[in-house]
Image (cartoon, rainbow, N blue to C red):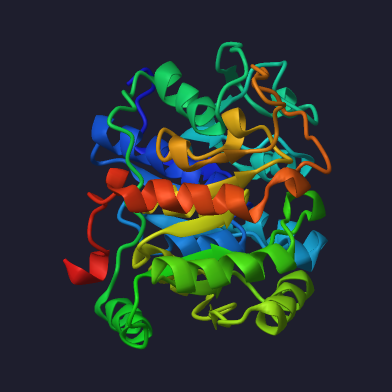
Length: 352
């Protein structure tokens, strides 16, 4: 590696999808130096996803809900620590403050153009400028700079302990059809589809394909209201697992799925990392930047672009596009999956 790094700190504190995208970076670094010790600063939510992961040696929790006290608690934990390398993957002001607490010989961040919120003031080294690309590839640029080959790209979510295996088996023991978890809502209104259409799709999955739709996600007011409408409208009400098992439980449900249908949100990237086939509904965010990475592109529904539009990769968001996606559009992707293109999907981890 370009930097002799036995002690590495990662600053990527929030967003489940971004947390998933960091994992291939860790795999690349540990392949280059198996003795490397990795400390990752994370908020409690995404920390649940990687707690116990074999690539992560230590997690330092940053609780932003505690305000200034949350920052002071992280500073106290970092006060006596020294690192060889800091990967500053998050370019928001709160990350700059945490970065300033970290004692590291090398603080590697983004180039000036991409280092928002004056992030470049808090780093000692920067990766070269690069044209916009998928977020996953953007993070892998850090591996290029360090001389740590990123291929093969690996995530390996888990590990699954015996208790989690038992929970997953118990959950699926109640289902007598191939399960299709549906990620029904996100925190951004413009990314969401319509509950009435979800209800119609659930009926089609159950009646026309012999599949068991399962509603997954959290229990935010938006998700709960979506669940209510779906249950009222569907002739064959789906199984609801909103909030069941927390984030780790959600991973277990997605891992056992025959097929997943997801909006543009963290569980989409979890599903890709688990190598489960996923139909993704994209309209608000640029799918070339945040869509499913290298997999299941033929199952993606792209409402972001106009028909035939070769749009560039960008951070531009487009509102009122999700309404373009019809139930028929999703059913056609289910038919494509059912035709056999993805029938070689690996078995769920609890069955291995």
